[in-house]
Amino acid sequence: MRQKTATMGHNKTIIYNKEQWEMLINFRKKASRVMYALKDAGLDCFIYGSVARGDVSATSDMDIVIPHVMQSFIVELALDNIGITGRKLVQATPGSLIKAHIYLPDNTMVTFPLVQPVMRDVDFYAFGGKLGPDKLEDIEHNRVPGVNKQLMVIEPNPGGHIETPVSDISPGALAKKLGTGQDIINERIRVLSRRARVGITGVYLDRMLAPDEGFEVVLDGIAAEDSLVRRIVRKNR
Image (cartoon, rainbow, N blue to C red):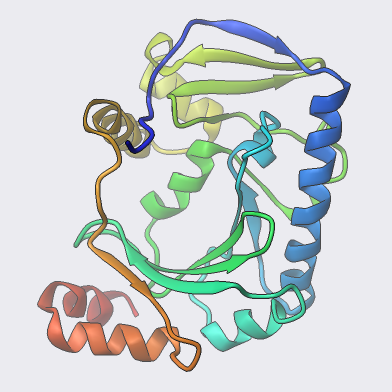
């Protein structure tokens, strides 16, 4: 059975013990290696989710994002010494952003858009909490608020964090807290709430790449056969 999300709990304060702080430090050290490899190649990037917020667990993923369209070979060259384990082209729905996923060791993934993102796409990451590479070392002061998959707002404090259900905060207040527009607040609540009812559903595009394939060539091939994808590629490239 697929794991469900958006199971909101109650308002509570979580105090981190020594092991939690050490786990966060370890995650951020691993993320830093990847992010500085990208930065050294001239690529802007940030990490989003629990590593940015601080509420990591032993099974947390490290999700690193390049927010701009970039030639995929440049990204892959920057990550060559890290060790690429897989590559996938994804699109959640016919109208959503088309993205490249590059998989690395330690549950790490680098994502970048293959077509120009709109503000809603950028706000998607701010909703979960995002942080740049220069902010990773100071874990006490550089943790950011964000919403987890259970629709709990995670707000860091000196000893750990406070968890508050999104239902206890107005969309306007939450948008201000996270630095996003209200549209993404409403959209993510709707999507994650649906997942709580029916589980995680499939995506429109989910194409693993062979070692000799490039993202751009694969996308052009899909666009030639799929009018919905072709419309997005022509409009936003």
